[in-house]
Structure formats: C-alpha cells, structure tokens
Length: 426
Image (cartoon, rainbow, N blue to C red):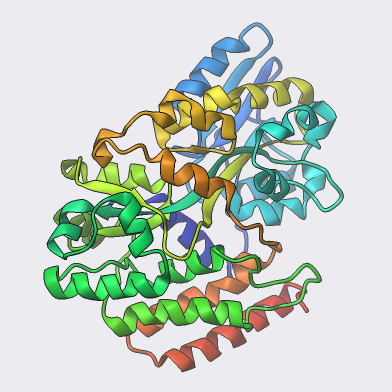
C-alpha cells in the first residue's frame, strides 16, 4: 500500500489528540549540530522537494559548502521537535509541513528570522497568505514557502459520461460548483454507474473547513469549534454518508487504489499534489482523468516551508541556499518532478506548469489550480488547532460505522473542548 500525502496529513491530525512526543534518533551525525565543519545539513521528507533541484543545489554551492540532504522518514514533526529540544543533531535547514507551522510558530526562537537575511526583498514573489502562514504575529518570518495545496476536483471523464454528467472541465466546474449540486450529481452517478464520488466523510469535512476564514480556535485563543461554520462542515460530511455516496475508504488503501483504477471511485477532491498520487497508483488510467474547480470554492490542503534553524553555522549561507532552491524557476521544476504546486505566482507562467498534461487528457491543469491558489481564504490557525480538530474526524469515522450523527457531533465537541482546555485554550 502506498499512502498518499493526504492520508499522511490526516494521520498527523488524528495522532495529535493524545500523543506525546517520544525520543527518536537521526542519521545526520553527532554533536550539537546536524552537520560537520564545512557542511550544511538539510532535512526534508520524501517528495518534499525536487530531487533534481536538491542535486543542482549541491553543485551550485559546492564552492561554499557541502550540502548534506537527508530524507527523514516517519513522523517528521515529532523527530524535528525532539531534536530541537535536545540541542543535538540539529540541521542547518529543515522542512516544516504546513499543518505543523502553527506549532513551530509558537517556538519561533528555535528558528532564524529570514527577514534578517534578505527575505523581505523577495517576499513579494510569493503568495501573501502563504508568507503570512510562515510568519509570527510580530512579523518574523521563520518559513520560506516551498509549495501550497490549492484544491480542485479530479474526476474520471469516462465515468462522468456514463453517468450522464458533464465532462468538460469548465462545464463540470459550473454544474457541480456548490456542495448541493455536487451531491445531486453524486446521487445521479451512483444510480447510473454505482460509482461513489466521496472517498470518505472526513475528506468533505476537511475541505469545507478549509474553504472558510475561521477554523476551530479564534485569535483570542477561544474555542469556536462548536459554532455554525464547523457545524455546516459536519452536516455536509454526514450528508455524504446519508446519501450513500461515501466510499468509506482511505487514500492509499487497497480499496482506494482499486476504486480509482476501476472507476468505482471516480472523484478525488484534493490538493494539486494529489495528481501524483493518482498517477502513481492508477497509471493505467492515463488520459481518463480531468480536473475542475472544487465544489464550494477554493481551499488549501498541505503545503510546506523551509526554515533556517538558530543552530545554523552560517545562517546567511543557509538562507541563500533556501532562496535558490525555492526560486520561481526551481519551484516550477518541483512541480514537474513531484507535483509540488509553487507558492510563487511567477512560476505559473512557466512551461512546466502551462504545458498540457497527458495523464489528464492534455489538459492544462494550471488553468484550475492557478486561479484557485490566488483566491484561497486566509484563516487563523492556532497551535492547538490540529489537536482540537481530531475528535471531529474520529467521530465522523464512527458515523460512517453507524453511530447517530447528532451523538457524534456532541461527542466531538465535548472531546475537542477538553483537549483545548488541556492546551490552554479558552
């Protein structure tokens, strides 16, 4: 089984509710830093950066340092948190996943303020909302944007045709532009083909929350997960279960792979990077997929950053390496190599993004994801946001297994409040 990025994102959320950080080790060396003299250590995760760009960076800076990249497996956040706390084996440069940034912003003293090394001169090249996500309330920038996860609706054109639905991306985006019209289409397609257009209820919940401007905790550190915006997301997720259009499966599972291959799961509503998951797990479906706007409007799932740690031996050089790796040109290469959708709009005009994609029937998917990227709503995300959201995902799984939806909602709210209180949330 190959876990998709969205699976890993959700697993990370679900694991935050009660888990502590365990001690762990790294293979980056010994002593108080992750690199030796004359070396610059870089930590990231598989598919987190373009291997081509990283190799080229090693050559680009060969006269100044020996770049030592390490792909850290397992729970990246846990390993980075433990390493920073221990003061040992700390890399000069590290990745930070978007869903973990709120936590690391609260520990900004562990990272360099990139403005001190030149980020303010290039900040305008990157999406404002993404830069803000990597910034502290007092204006320090600890995260240089790697990529973002603008959402769209991947769909099987052949299955939509069989189900009597529109097949052209523009027409699909219009006809299925709201969640109500999406569910009408899902009901119709199920009746005609048996296909299920929702992977799982949690996916709908996550998407709808991400389409709004408020989440589970407000800027005054008050829990608001019991308010109408979250209840609306919950009700839409439950609607997928009630209508019977929920496949009740997990991304990357055997059933998921079979579903996207056979067409029994003909829709994946997710971030741009999900394209590589579909491509890798259903290669024989090349040419059958298209992308349209997501129902309910744009949102963001995932996306990540590079940060320079306070332990960096030469923070200016580390920043220069980061800036080079994440230049608009190299960000476009990252999209070509690993479907890392750039946070730099200038990249959207480059060939790697503007050329047609054969897997998607020659469609220029930038026409969907580019406008979505620039319209993503900005929502405040507190350090405890992921932890207090976990009970809602847990309870949606219980609803899929037969639990009463109203009982599930009450249980989720109560558990979320308790988690929030333990984390100091009002």
